[in-house]
Image 1 (cartoon, rainbow, N blue to C red):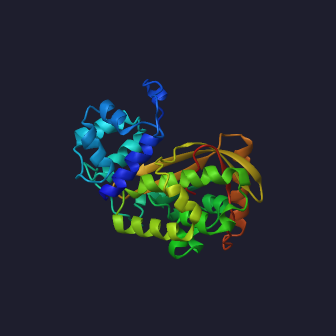
Image 2: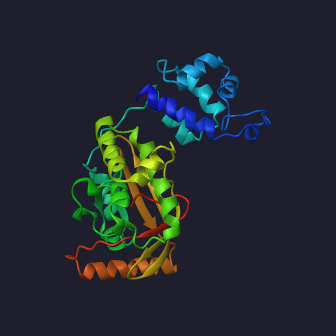
Image 3: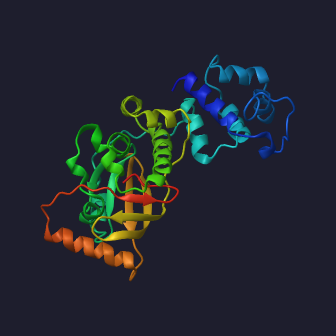
Amino acid sequence: MSSDELARFLRSRRAAIQPDEIGLGARSRRRTQGLRREDVAELATMSADYYRRLEQARIGPPSPQILDALARALCLTADERDYLYRVADREPPPRPALSRHVAPALQQLVAGLGDSPAQVMTLLGETIIQNPAAVALLGDHSIYTGDARNSTYRWFTDPASRSIHPPEEHEEESCARVAELRARSVHVGDSEADRLIGTIRARSPEFERMWQEQRVALCRSGTKTLVHPEVGMLDLECQILRTEGLGQLLVAFTAAAGSRAAGQLRELSIAHARQPARRHRHTVARTGRRPTSA
């Protein structure tokens, strides 16, 4: 990553914090949104001149100790702190190469979930395999080719991918997808991630606007509400698990035994089994704070 990217991220996080939020109180005659550079330098116990050069991209990558101090001073979340380290090219964990080979044990796990929809995705959001229940619920992702195989690419370039989402949820969904892609992009090969991001930035003004906001956050497991054109709304638990080594995500949806959602999933599975050759494409509406990458 470049020092320019590090500088932009530091400036954006500094502007997002108000002095009274961290006990500094109101500062008189302020012209700067958020904290001043001097405030951050003081909180991080470093010289104001050194921090200024970081924000102006006039200095090399800082040490891990400096990055740790900056993360505390800027009140970064765990995801943001991870991004700060990686964008500064410091102590990144081994970056797994993007692999589209799914380990046999993981394939068996996905297949064995029965009526519970499950799929394996790359860190950048491409679906690799789906079980029949996932195809019935989310549509057959194998019909897509090229960049369209990526869920975030589809969201920002294909209006049909949003057609069943309530319009008032589009902004939140978009923000979450951009923050997710930024967080995941530093875990994979730079060339592939940079090419995908560059393509979406060129094709979607909305994505470009949100990309400039420097948000970083990973999607989490939790309760999701989905809307299916045949069975209506489903309240499901979504689990998102990362597999080590291959750089893949297992995304699974489950419903409590005996619940209405469990019956709906069973109904979808039966209908799909009766038409095994049918490949369908439909949009699934997701609500909640953290949407999945399905």
